[in-house]
Length: 422
Image (cartoon, rainbow, N blue to C red; front, side, top):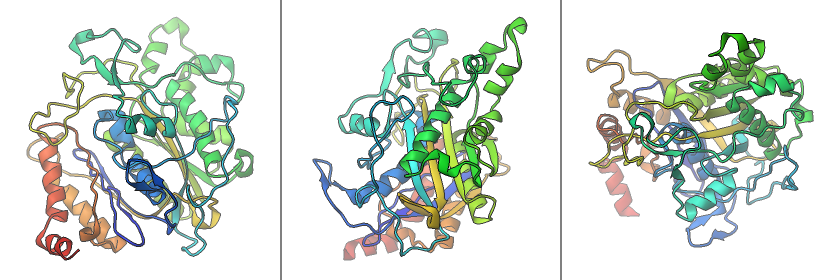
């Protein structure tokens, strides 16, 4: 769950995870004045932190459930791809893209850099623009496997390019690069870009107490590279083992903080963020790379929408849509930040425990319990929240549990009376 609040008026987002270990966050937006209105969308530059929080809370939703109904409040964020020397240059942080607010607590954890690849989009900026333009990024083509294979839905969300990688730039031997999971190759590129987006040269933080926390549920390429016993070598192990994903990042950039992969299925990347925040607050690291990645390299059955359309909270909802994405964010202590997208006020997780209906059945009561705990500990009144971003699997079981849990917390008589006064 994620909540964002502006100084002058409350505006929040939340995302609750069902049937998986739940993760909750409260995030505070820096006090930066409005600068320009984005044409036709009613958004000011003040929405940038809110967009980023939605972006972060929906990373794993995008990864597992497609891009339907996501990213409903988006603002422009400049992007740079230094790996391929495309002629872009980093932008000096200003009032439009977030700066370090010297008035805030220097010990709080802030979000300072981000980068990502999305369906048909090589950057946050491109993804944003395509959503504003109403482009359907869930496509029917055979880039991953033949259409209709095993009766699978033909529509999925896919990245543009997972083949190219500058191995020399990252010091990866050619033999290793050839059997390295494309997910790991993407993470190396995006880590570099996120660091630069924070206004930092990677050379500056070599040997630093920086942690790496990667949410990743599978390495679907490992099966292919290990199916022929005569071709198996040590490179396949170090290239596809999920434990090596964060460790490769730590090795490449010379980070000395905690470094491990996390698999909690749909909530993996948010769980990774919670772990990173805790590590910073307990002194295990000063900064942290937090990542989530998913590629569709192997056909998978189960709970999928036959039409390839995720109809969350709709009576016609009949499953989710598989999609690809890779995102890396950099979080730091406020005292170290050169740019601030948002401030993380709190993070917490729980899980459902035993349930009569079975392990995959979500427990709305536990989701509600977690939300109440996080709001209480962060000192945020749920009445102030004006936007809720949900898990929204589009399934008959998950949707009712989630939406009723949200309604029980946010939609009450006190909220109605407060709204009427405004």
